[in-house]
Image (tube, rainbow, N blue to C red; front, side, top):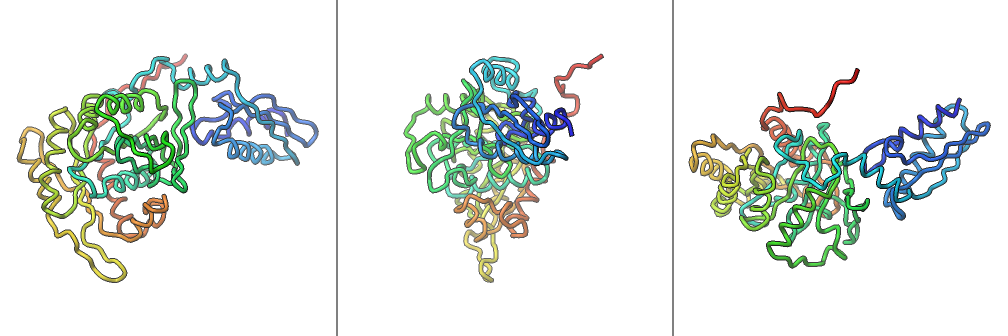
Length: 377
């Protein structure tokens, strides 16, 4: 047992929001060791940090995990303005508020869209995010459905209708984490989930732009955008800000929803985005022992066919996922625990996991892209 052992142990604790070690973030202050008693100072990023209790608990556990230490006091303080500025500079080395999700980024940006509302687009988004996370990928969600935000509730980040707030570090926003997925939504900045956001085009564009520049997602493999249905301001803004992003179209088996879904795909192509596939949600499923086929069949196939023939230069578009009707999926949405997390054996969860694998292998090769690393001597 030595002081250096203690410093290494507590410094290795991971901040639950920033996903970096406390040592890297400069959040470990004075460390003292007297006989078998440890005293560790933890410097929180801000007063009222939502992760304060977990950080304190994890640091205490790490200290007591060092052989020979019988007791530990954790002294919690708050960073000075200079210390916080240094932390922010370390997280955002470029300094400027810029969109990190450029065409050169290693993060794949996937916009999940639909032609009309009510097809389960947001449910597909959150379950796809959790399925990708379960497969070992680092995933974030940007809820771009400003008027109809639902991701906070679906991810359990709005308990009893009151949203969990992101942490503000000067001009940087740290997104809350749920089910190991980083999430940002305008629904985290309103009074409660019943609050209506009545904004027109310019405000919508500014909000999406600010989420991309000011939110610190860190290193991600995938950033999923939950778009509002249709071909309005947000879809156009995303196409302009992220023209290299990929698009996943969600529809139902109902033929009536196919035409409007094709329009959403055509808009994506007009802004330079690539449609990676179509997902058919609410297909026939067994509910309480009874097979239900409420919406017919063929809707997704019609969308895929329409997008494949509308512009032959963009290639074939396929149906890459079919998600059956599931009571568990509905319950998961109501409780904030997506079905992929709640019950991996549910047919809808299994379908989501298969969809995640199709999405993960549908992107362009990253071979040859720079990692931004310099050799050391």
